[in-house]
Structure formats: C-alpha cells, structure tokens
Length: 466
Ligand SMILES: [Zn+2]
Image (cartoon, rainbow, N blue to C red):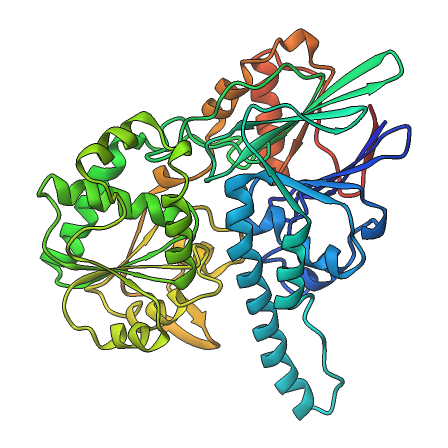
C-alpha cells in the first residue's frame, strides 16, 4: 500500500493525498484548490498528478476550498467514483463549489477581454458552474462516529475536528490478507474553545497519522479575551473615532463566530448601538447552513440558544445580499461594522470596502485570521504603508488591528493535546502536511520533544510505502 502527497506538501494550500492499496483501490484524501500562488496557481491546479478516471473514492475532511475546490475539475475530467464526507460538508460544498466556479468564470471573462484586445486566444475557466452542480451527484454523506464500509477491505469513521462546520478526521482501516493497517488523516485541526462548535474529539488509534501543521510554531491569544478585545476595537473605532470597522472574514466559520460574539455582547447590553452589516451572499448562505446543523454545536452554544433562539441575529444586524445594497454601504457615513469576505482580502466585496476605507485614519481594519504570504491580507497585516487594490495604489492610514484568537486552526499546544489520544508507541509514522516548511521543521522538533517520533515532512509528489 502506498501514499503519495500531491498538494499541501511543505505549503498550506491544494491538499491532495492519494492512497493506493495493493489490490489497486485508489482513495484520494481531499481534492483542494491551490490559492494565492501567483502565476503558478492555474498550472498547479490543472496538473493533478493523477488521472481523475482512476480514482475510486474521494474522501473530504472538510469543505474549505483548499481541501475541496478541485472536485468540479476532476468530475469534469472523468471522475466517476464516490465522494464521501459528513452531512454538513456536503451542504457547505453545495454553496462553496458553485461560488468557486463563479469566481473562475468571472476571472476568465476579465482575462479574456484583455487577451482579445491583444489578439491572443481566449482561455477556458478551470471549471464552470455546471461542473460544480454535476459534482454534487457524486456525494455520499455520513454522520460522525458511524462505521462506513467503503468496500470489503476498507472501512471509514469520521470524528470531529472542531475546525469548521462538518470538519472531520478521516479514520481508515484497511484489511490486506491477514494484515490490518490504520490510517488517520486529521484534515485541519480546530481550537479547543471554539465559540460555536464542539471541540476536537479523540480519534481511534492509528498506525499512520497524516496531520496539519499550519500553526506548528505559534501560540494563539487566549480565546477568553477575544470578546473583550473585539469590544475594545468596536468602541475605539465606532465610538471614539466615529469610523467604520471593516472585518474581512472567511464566509464559513469565522463570520458566524464574529456575528455570534457580537450577539453575545448585544445580549449583555455592551455593544454600542451601531449598525452591523454582513455583506456577503456566501456568508449569508453559510450562516443558514450552520443554523441547520445544531448537532455540531457545543453545550455553551446550545444553552445560549435556550434564551436566544437565533444566535446569528440581533436588532442592529443586517445581512446584505444584493449588490446594490452593498454599494450603498460606500456612502454610509455613520460609524458601522462591516463584516465581509474574503478573509485573505483577495476576492469578494471586502476589496471594495477596503478601497473605500483604508486611506482614512478614522477607520479600522480588523484582521481575524490566517492570510497566506503574498495575499493582500498578509500585506495589510504586516503593516505595509501602501497597498494595491484593483490595480490602484492606496495609502494605509486606517488602523490595522489583529485578533488571532478567532483562528480556525489550533496552535501547536492545541494540536499536540489533540494528538495525545494516541498511543505513541503504536504510531509507525507521522506525516506533517499543510504548513510552511520552516514551521513544519519547528513543529517536528516540538513533537519529538513530546515523544512523537518517526516524523516525515513529505515533498510535493513524494511517495511512501506503508
Ligand atoms: Zn480548513
């Protein structure tokens, strides 16, 4: 049996890991899109490293596009297997894959206008909305902690990772002759005190562990302080400076956590009476899906809901769906809070709000999540004095504040605590994926200090015999 690492190898994007058993069964773990890799991105996405027709099963750890975003592409190119994931991951993929297709179609359209002017041949988007819609026909969803027989030799159990709604560790058991091999792919690992979701749950003992390492050398702020700090930024911006607070945020997970935090502050009577806008159709759809999955909520959230049945709504909050209403926010002169996607500030309506607000001292940009190097978010976060938005240079005069505690990824202490459910002596090998190489080297050292051994950091395309 072999495993080949075809993405998120010494980097944080494009997760794809291919298992091939001795009898020739192929199981792909995640099928993520590369994002933010500049000119290389399209080429990386089109060269999968396998033929989609040869894949029997695709198992998704969660719905984030860097884990699921190439599903329509493989379906377009002949994949006819089964896509297995949790119920919530299926629901989120239904909106995220179409949204991703829309972005690709839009980008190709813009790019082709320029190419036509230059007399060059036009390009085809990597996939279209119809490919995203077609791919949903291949999904089979199962609940957490249920044993699912994939075929006569392979069984699967999903366990909760607390990363985003539907997020799951993929626990596989392979029987080959008299031998049994157990593989766990953790996908992305969440934090221990997610405001909404259950914390990462212990998972069955494995022989081979494939795990993420995004924050392998970082410790986050204390989550308990996050509400207090959020309130401080709201007061400073909207009450003292009478400005706009722009919160670029991922549509799935982060946006709901921010809204829920503001809701809690509202319930306590602490939130200043300023208008709050969630300006992103995708975030609105994701919030509706979250409302449909209370089985994933933690006890504190469920207790809150006994008194406040809608944890994602309060009097001063408006969800903005139409483009016209979104544009009207540009002329909104009152202090307000605008939560908009995308989190890394590379796409979506947030770019308009940033262009409109970034050069005024009275406004604040609150960065609440990970921004891959080279993204607009990373440039703003590291304090660049000037940035380019839609090809125009803007001076950064607004205050930039950072609140890491809303991260959907655990820090190294949280990840090691999560892995500590394993008997270390039974672990034959640990593969670190989904992390910058330097971070992975540091995480490896910390893991070894905690008596986890036999750690590999696979390169792109590297294959291992299991
Ligand atoms: Zn993720």
